[in-house]
Amino acid sequence: MRWSVIFSAAVLVLCVVSARGQTTRPEPPRPGREFQSAETRRLEADEAANPGLLWLEQGKSLWSKPEGTAAKSCAGCHGGDVAGAMQGVATRYPAVDPASGRLLNIEGRINQCRTERQGAPKLPYEHASLLALTTLVTHASRGLPRAIRIDGPARPFFDLGHRFYVERQGQLNVACAQCHDAIVGKRLRGDTISQGQTDGWPAYRLEWQSLGSLQRRLRACSLGVRAEILDFDAPEYLALELYLAWRGGELPLSAPGVRR
Amino acid sequence: MATTRIVVPATAKKGQIIEIKTLVQHPMITGHGRDNVGKPIPRDIINAFVVTYGGEKVFRADLFPGVAANPFFAFSTIATVTGEIVFTWTDDQGVETVEKRQLTVI
Image 1 (cartoon, each protein chain N blue to C red):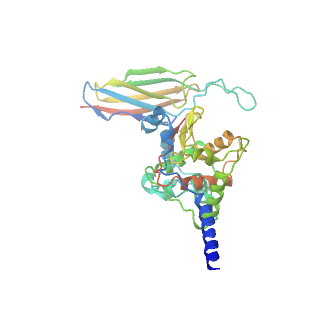
Image 2: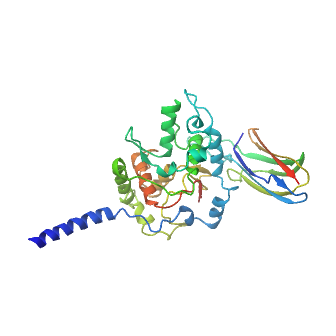
Image 3: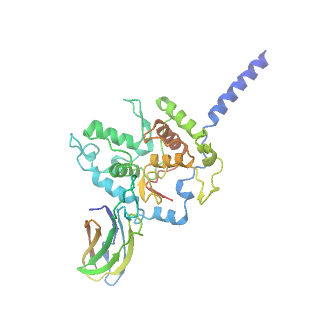
């Protein structure tokens, strides 16, 4: 009798551990740039040549520009010192907005500021100004590790993101984890399979000839496995952003990165 | 006016070789592409980049549709006199982006 109780308790513990145990992060986490060619890494590291920094410059000039019916600029609330005021902010996103209960990424947070504080319309994804402001805010946390919360109200979003990451999808019927966890470092045609880390985003992608958002990259992933390309801001992509941010562990943010 | 990033030393010794690096934001549309209904997208590239130093031309480049977006240039010149370095990019629409930097020769 006593043994059976102990046995069932042990089975229960094992089940819980294995269910939770799937949400492991790669050890050690390796930044996205490590999987790029030497030339691309050099381009990213060169402060004069990294083309992503053009969006940073653009963001700096937008920071003090009044917008919307309130005619308020970002600097009007946050102050003129972007690097100081926004330092560490990007490390906490995506995060759940306590008022609405929605999961917000940096783009979502900027748009919330626009609609609620500035009285300005939302900017669509890949709009030059939204890319510029996202780069500006993310760049202010350069070198800092993420501080993502996955407990409390964030837990359901985290679980959704995790499920999206491990479930097979698309005509190729593969899951993100099958490449980005299982065969990291191997070659896929001309490319090295990365850990799928998001530390360098938004990033300048040479293929795009432009800086792009992480969501644009995720849509390209969906295309790659011939799955349905979801809309920008789809709950699955937002949740996946949260999961990937957590999965990056101690990786310092390094946007704007340069990618193939 | 396009967004630019320019790296140029603020001061230099007379006769010193200085390196100048410039980056300009531009989509460099080749003119060979078509939109989603098959209509040709007209060419729009930066076609000329000129740099003057103290009023004298020190660098000039003609650009063509094969150049990638956001063109990057690095070149060197010799610091001669204290003066203004003026960077001018001109695109197909005639938009001129002009940036100025002061170089002090000591």
